[in-house]
Length: 144
Image (cartoon, rainbow, N blue to C red; front, side, top):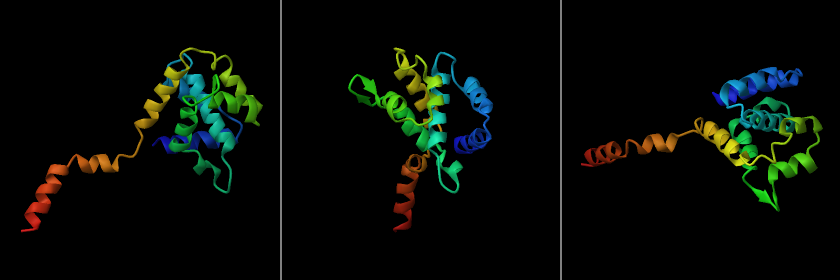
């Protein structure tokens, strides 16, 4: 479901409209800085999408990787701050991170977004393992 939402938000972004992204962020996350961090990370993902069907580059896994870069440190900064300040070609994205990298709660904000995205993680193996006893019984009964 999150991938479909991200694709729809990307379509709006391609039409120079991020109002739906900002609104989604406000409805989904606390307005303590988590919402701004989410918008900024999504905009980074959108700006990096390319190819024939760029909207398919905008998915949960890509966004999760961008958010997790906050937890990775390089010197006294994090990888996302390094990217924003030195590698980012879309300088307009900086405004969503204004003063956010200096916030002592940045890791907490990232954790909230990661927790949200983890709700949409595929759980195929976990689902099968819930029936482990039934699977063992099935194997025992069918091998006799």
